[in-house]
Picture 1 (spheres, helix red, strand yellow):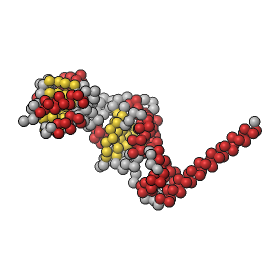
Picture 2 (picture 1 turned 90 degrees about the horizontal axis):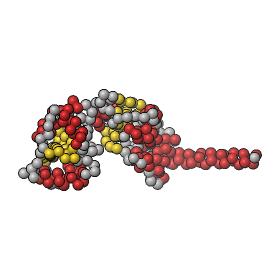
Picture 3 (picture 1 turned 60 degrees about the vertical axis):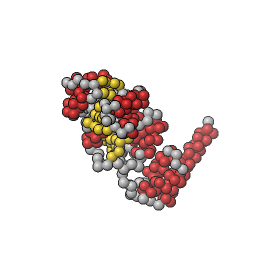
Picture 4 (picture 1 turned 120 degrees about the horizontal axis):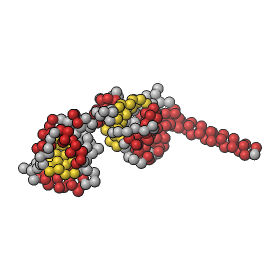
Length: 299
């Protein structure tokens, strides 16, 4: 008989939130694979439990190499408990490789449910929670980050992101640029901890607040795109959406067709808005060039 892989959710802040089964599994597992063995030690001390089995590290740097070892333990009948620093393993944390390998080998996989930063932030955000999607961490590079946000620009469901505190202001600024400065959002910081804070408001306002510097674990919840309607989208917004798609690599013809479909408008109306904006831009550039020429001649 094969063993069992147990994915255990750990507290995202307050250790009192740990489920009772977590202590039982820590005491009874043959192997405890931990993202950070030092944090595991602090957690077990807080819970008053001593792990009964062998403790090994399992983090991003050794995940690929250690997975086969743990699968062999499981195949031999061991009960392996996987814990990360906070929350559920494999959700923006190590664990997916091990789960996939265990399933392929026919090993039973179960879980100890626990606190979730995603669900906690959603519940506290004040934004719709009937439909949502989790986007994890955005890319660190600005260009790749903008590209990922543009892919989600038309998403109707509430969006949930994780972010590092030192990148929060840049991320919120990029969201305001792509989603629109007035799109509602909530920044949830240090959830369940002593200095828990939930900051709600338009993206532009939150970006300005974050520019002063923010600390702690961050979860960002963003309102989904509004339902399209001709009365909601003026020419400037139509042009903005076309440009976002063009910058993401779409040809103008396809971008215009997609925006027209989103807005429930004839393609010709979107096309005319783009042409008018282009003509206005050319006229402005010509006017500026004329003024510059006159100034040069006056000299």
